[in-house]
Structure formats: C-alpha cells, structure tokens
Image (tube, rainbow, N blue to C red; front, top):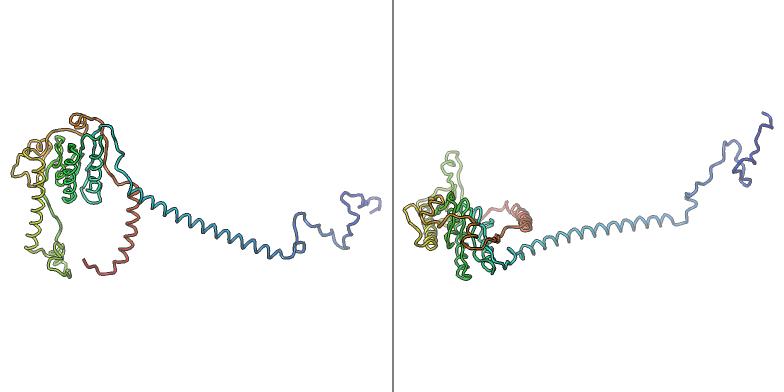
Length: 350
C-alpha cells in the first residue's frame, strides 16, 4: 500500500499528543477509567470500616422501627379493650326525652339470663323509662314463649316497685305469644292488650330431661358415679330415679306453680273468671283470653299509645347487647375456653 493513502493520526479528532503510544502487538490501548466509578486503589483508606458502620447503623434503626411498631400495635389493642369496657359500663339505654311520649320496653324471645329478654336488660330499660319525666306510660311489648321463672319473677317485682314509686301506668301489648314466664311478667301490668289470634296463658311449670338407664343396661354400659351426699346425683340422667327424688322434684314444681298463680291472681284480681283448666298449663287465643279475664282488650302498640295513653309519640327504651359487648364476650369466651381445656385432664368434683 502506498504511503500516500495513509492518514496522519495527529489529524484525527480526540488525538492526545501526551498520551503514550500503545504497546506493540496490541490492537488498542486499555480504555480510560470510566467516569463516575472508582476502583479499590482510588478509594480512601478505611472505607471498609465506614461501610460496615453504615450497615450496622441501618440494621439498628430497622430493629428500633420494628420494636416501635410492635409497641404501637400492643398499645392499640389495649386501648381498644379499655374502650370496650368503658363503653359497656357507661352506655345509657336511651337519652332522656322530656317531651311527652309513650315509653316501650320489648320482651321478645326466650326469657333467660344472658338473653335480650333477661331481668338485667329489661329491668334497666324499665328504670330508664319510669325515670324519664316525659314518659306518660310504659308499655311492655311482648312476644315470648316464656322461659325462666326466676328472671320473670325479678321483672315482675321490679314492675310493681316502679309503679308504686313513680305512679305511672304500665300496659302489656301481646304480639304473637305471651305464654308461661312471659305471662308471669304481663300479669303485673295494669291492663293487657292482645290480638284476637295471639297465644296467651300456659300458667304452669315444667322440668324436663331424659333417662338412659334402660338403654345402658341393654348395651352393657355401667354408670360409675361417686358422690358425697345422698342426693348429690339427683336428676342424673344415667342413674335411676327413686320415688323419694320424684316426690321432692314435684314438690318444688308445685311451689313454683303456686307462686305463679299468686302473681296472676294479684295482678288480674276480680277480672279473672277461674276455671279448672285456667292454671293447668293450657293456653288460649287472644279472644278467649279476654273472655277468661286473662287479657282486657284487643289492641296494638299504636292503638294503646293513641287511644289509651293519648300520646302518639313512641320511644323505645329496650336495652340490647351492643357490638362492643359482643366482642368483649367473645374475647372473654376465648380466654375461658383455653382455661377450660387446660383443666380437662383434672377429674371434676361438683
């Protein structure tokens, strides 16, 4: 190739005269240091220590943040349960209403401790209704098949006490059913209003259960029950019932039945038209109940408020279990369940 065809490298763009020539035999000199990057030789002495310190401090800060978050979560749960307890203890059935109105307290479902129709809830609602100066009368709105005679007796006693203290009338309005313990409560009202097809009555007491002694004999199962006390195993379904125990249970039922009858007679007075079946546990329609003196008139809640109380505005004082109480009960039940499981291995003594 002729020298005339060769180009002069000094005339090419980017040529550096101070740059040493590339070694012989190499296609190109080693590239220059990439801008922005430092090699190990260019770093300051002690950089390893500084990097480790940064990593250690970052790990410590992360642990502190984790601990703070856990503490925050625990305090939040604690505050939540404190709020539940405070809300359950300081809640009010209803705000005081000073304008004239008809106060209503519902008794619905089974009458039992822990239920909505318990003496705890109903009596608290009754007190709030009687103490409100705007309440001209208190109406018991009843739809219940009955339940515990103890809870019913506590409600009945409280109604009598509040009537005497506040001098306000009490009316019972029956929707579908007012039987057994529910009628025990209704009998304390000044007047009872029913629908013509309502079920009313069932003035009686029962104690039910099952006996499996015959079945156990057939399958060859032996009941091993140890007691301290002759009657500690009384009403045990896997043990035979003696005549003495049967007589004793019947005397208890008769006594409670007589208490029921006494409350009904005291509440209804001369309006009762007694028949042999009246206190036998039978029940009647609303129309029949009026004829027997177990009820006074046909009428609904609105009818009583409008025509009897003469105050159409109706305020509900019924006390119901709220969400906070349900959550608290579930939380408590979970703790109790754990305790019960831990005790299952221990033989029970009752």
